[in-house]
Amino acid sequence: MGDKQNLLRSLPSVNELAEEGIKVLKGKYSFRLMVEAARYVLKDARNTVIDKGTAFNKDELLEKLSNYLEAKATPSLKQVINGTGIVLHTNLGRSVLSEKAQEAVQRIIKGYCNLEIDLVSGKRGSRYSHVEQLLVEMTGAEAALVVNNNAAAVFLVLLSLAKGKGVIVSRGQLVEIGGSFRVPEIMAASGARLVEVGTTNKTKLADYEMALTEDTALILKVHTSNYRIVGFTEEVPLDQLSALGKAHDIPVVEDLGSGFFVNLQEWGICDEPSVQQSVAEGADVVCFSGDKLLGGPQAGIIVGKKQYIDVIKKNPLNRALRVDKMTLAALEATLREYIFEENHLQSIPTLKMLTVSNEELKVKADELVKLLNSSLEGHAEIAVDQDFSEAGGGSLPTTKLPTWVVRLKPLNMTLNALVDKLRTGDPAVLARISDDRIIFDVRTIEDDEFVLLKDRLCAEMGKG
Image (cartoon, rainbow, N blue to C red; front, side):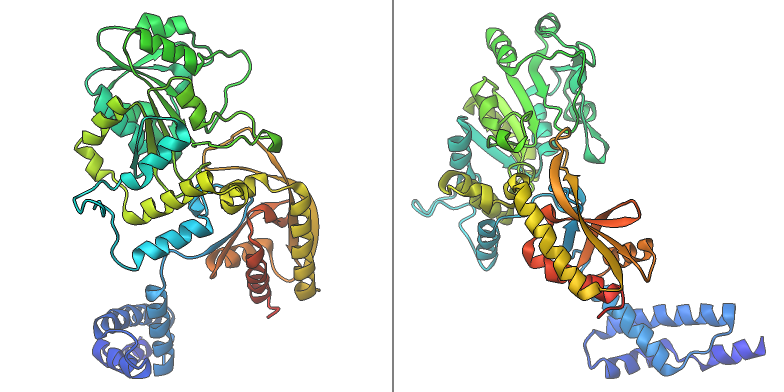
């Protein structure tokens, strides 16, 4: 015990270690942060001395001090190389923005912008004016509004049009989206009353008709964008629901979820309704995401009849859910690509990744294998193989996209150790694991990330 007491007494004080750190690190960090780091390092050192009797010299303490500060100063958000093949990976930020969207955001954040001023009249304008007409032109709707995500869009619609009244929904459409947010819970929070009709697998037009009362505020159709019910099923087409609503002067709202704008049948994507189709089939209000199949920034987009959109816009909560200038800049640029660019299937990364040909993927996989083999010979078994990708993000749940992958097995370390090192490094690398191999799906790896991926693998496998 005496030795431990001597070791504890030999440790410097917090101020002594902090002042030494300021000198060695040449003022890189503030004295306040240095004191915080010194307290942490010395507390850890004392615990180690007491538990193990380990001695620490000044250089070791300063190294721990530097490591602590470097870790604290490193941003939490970092670049990730997505080798999973999941195009709209919710945990990785969903859609990758196009170059034009990135440029638009960069241009806007450099200084002030005309977010809420009409530069022609010099009077206050609306932030929605930058995207509303574009959405109207794209969808065929009369008006549009943008909030911060689709759950907020549905909530705001229900709050504005159905608070205190009944909303008819098929039992087969009581969807749960990511993070355990459920349609019934969103409806309850909005103050609307859920009126369930039909059964899980079958709902008929007559079910909706029988549920109509003077208390009915609207009919809600929820597209099951993150799952499908198959087999002995029936649901009412939107055009029939719209006709029913029109006959009884009750608005019909469709929550599309993913926000599809282009026909991708030739790429095997066939069971997703488009926003234009929903508007054309008579939906009074349509809600969808900006960062799923649209391929833009996170946003909840509401389009529809002007009489209903105007009511939603005037809701006081709209201000709390509104989007900022960076979101609007990215969304405007993305929408303009759809309207004005003939090659938007190539320029918008989400669409490009969904429609890339199997032949192109094979070429990419061969190139990646060649690069890795030239650098990791003797350290890994590497091969090209066929597999399937997913859209992800709660979109296209039954669509499997044929792809080519690179399978890698480390020879000088365990698979789990390599996976952990790749995930926690910078840039982080995420991939799939199957049959004792790491699977890199080239669908979601950009060409300019190949060298980064190679460098990360070399560094973590001791082949620098």
